[in-house]
Amino acid sequence: MNVETVEWDDPSAEALRAAMSREMDERYADMAGFDFPEDFSVARDSVVYTGLARTEEGLAVGHIALRRLGGELEIKRMYVAPGHRGNGVAVALLEAAESAAASAGAERVVLQTGDRQPDAVRLYEREGYTRIPAYPPYHLVPNSLCYQKRVT
Image (cartoon, rainbow, N blue to C red; front, top):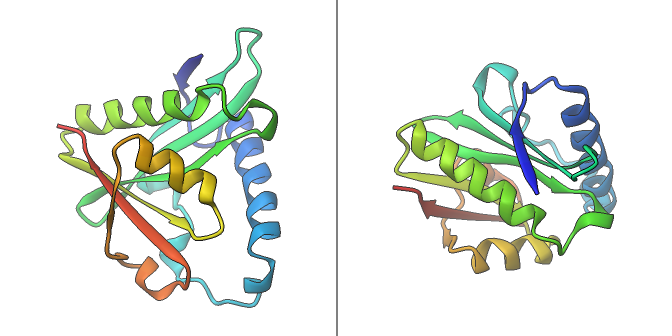
């Protein structure tokens, strides 16, 4: 599996984020009226790394990004297309983002996921991420699960 660095606005990256949004909208349909904090969205100028996983044929099947959030680097928009899950794509994406974070001088990365993503929770815990208290802005969002991993 090849993970390449791309710009945030790369068309394949945008398509994968849109697919992720549709899937999350379904999983969290009952929260459609919830007023999410502004920091919940990802501002382009906060992104320090965007990675795409591609098959040998060049098809983009996974996405991950790192953004600056306060003094932290946070993993955002981690997504693997459903037909490619369970094949090591997510692990390759995490390793690429962790490497980028370490290269940027971070001691750890943090992330937030939701309680309706047990597949993501299993992945993060299996890959050495440990639960931490919900950090801003996620402390305001019901069902938030936050994690960290040391990268140096």
